[in-house]
Image (cartoon, rainbow, N blue to C red; front, side):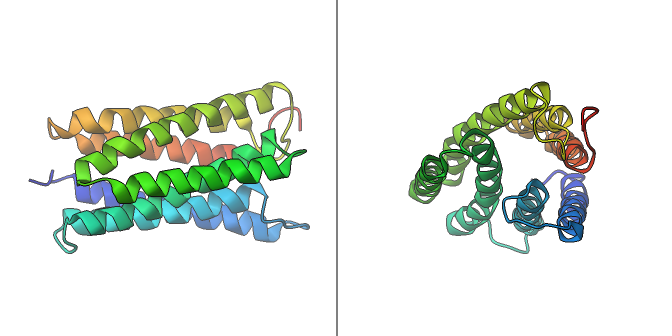
Length: 210
């Protein structure tokens, strides 16, 4: 049975993520010099993929889209591109002087993640098998952007605020499985949304050392 508040929160989440994605892309477009490796572009596209994946989840919860394994795998693949763009942003920081190694890491991540999604025999296993990829990337992301802030790199984004946002989103994701058993999935969705909003704020403001 679908929680009464869940579709409402999910629809609101879709609008917020779409709005954030458009704001980030607008910031990128307004820049004097634009590169596809710029943080606003990468995270703007990532937010739009996340919104698309969340839209599919809403349609399934409302019964407008069948909750079948193939549909869920397509939805998870869409969401996976959010993780891929996050990974690209992280790799660009650590491997700026060794781009080929960075490309290999991204390609390897994509191949393994998509293989896990499409080889899983049931929906619950898709969720379970993707979770390590999600949290591993979250942890690397948090460490990366805290260090970037501490070392006063990336003057165009606030690494500490971004890291705090990801920690909150990670907390929301971690609660989702346990909360779903007691009808409180909507609470974890709100926590996740707050985290993503703070992450976006970190992309829009500059640190004190800029």
